[in-house]
Length: 287
Image (cartoon, rainbow, N blue to C red; front, side, top):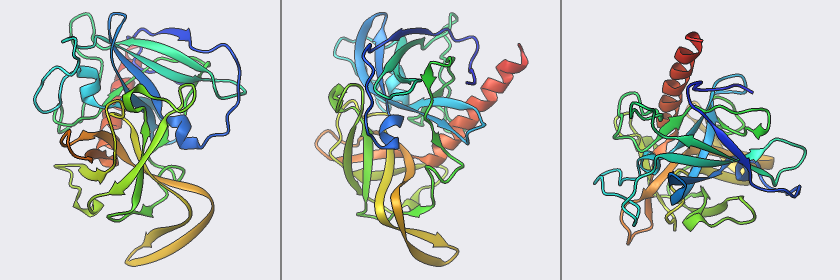
């Protein structure tokens, strides 16, 4: 296993004792339950996931910026009813072993001794982008299952148009399906992805999402038929196995009275991972 951000301490504890095996889809394994805390007090729950370019490259944790700041991304208003903001985060990783169904909780501080944040922001948009990365330390007992940004496992080149189904895989209101497995909420793409730009790498979905799903991966999941594009030609492909396209990270609804939600496009995650990788290499060079 690789290690990341070597000046970040990690404290771990087991979350389950009974070994069980579950028959679940790969994307189910990739969404991680997180708790935002002040000391030991849980202020909020949310979702995170791991990303890497490929199996040999650096791996980082990704979630929403408003999860780690504890403040509304636009207004800066405190999100917790307690008035507190988090100073540490607890991540429930899958435990490495023969069976899934075991978790390992890892508590990480969000700030260094000098007050600087541990999280890493978008290279150009900075605090305007509601997506951050955390470099982590882990041992052989953590089962890493990232979304790969440069392989066909998670980015098969599927074409998705408006009104096509997309899934947000996370933990609404802290709710799980079984144990620490996430809930799949499915809605529809609400615009053309061709309208995403480097200056504003977001798009809209129409999905009944709720608090706790912030930081969830958004994917297009298909069984059987899907579309791809070869140059100027469109093709229909039938796959005998489930296939999915990783699209981005869910950021929240645009209005509490609406089911329209904002997703930060995968291109923004590519940028944040590049920042995290550069930070990791810089720290490694000092060892």
